[in-house]
Image 1 (spheres, helix red, strand yellow):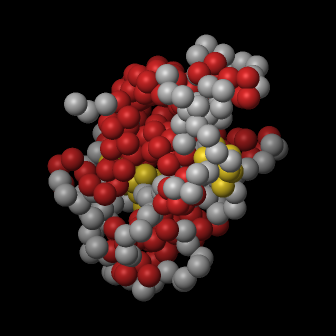
Image 2 (image 1 turned 45 degrees about the vertical axis):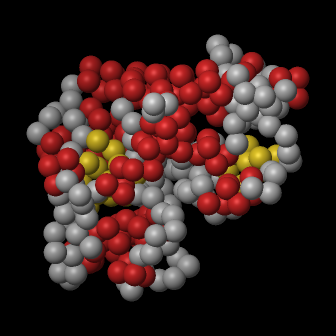
Length: 286
């Protein structure tokens, strides 16, 4: 019998790998390189977010056009999928300007299209969000967000109303709350997994230590970005209920800093030696 943990793990691992297998299913997929693209807008437009993920798979076509050591594995995987035709039937590709590699990835994809190196590719969009607290930048960011919403609506043919957007935000925030409950179980016992999420942070040592290791947690949290929010909230709550009953994990606690990770390989290597990864720099984890 498939458990909530099984379904969430598959919801993290499978969507990007499945692109290119079923043209009809791909037509509502918006391929995204980084979670700063608002998934609420994607869903309100009637589309489905799918995040590009790296990992251990070879990317020979992408390696031939991208400079080594400059692009993370997720962007190699995205460009590989574009060059090999796996994204031909997707609705769109959206990259944010929130990091230099993603912006360069956008420019590379546009150049590959211009040169005819890619036989078929959906619209490649830049979400040009700027990071600043000035009033002018805030106005610019609002305009860029509205533009992204309009462009996705033009692709899908579904133009969301303000109420549609509010509903998408409300549902996604409920899923975020469920994800925070799971994340709390990485650092302490079930006391942080209930109604106190978002409230005062309790001393994890008094709650018996973590119940959830990082290699298991990363896909459970990463599924938030791809599993429909109502389904994610239900599955994450079910998984948290089950995990909270486990005995505390023993071992040194590790934080992964530096280059963001988007796969479980490093977590698994550390945890196979008795450590517990309680947080990481990652687009999908903590």
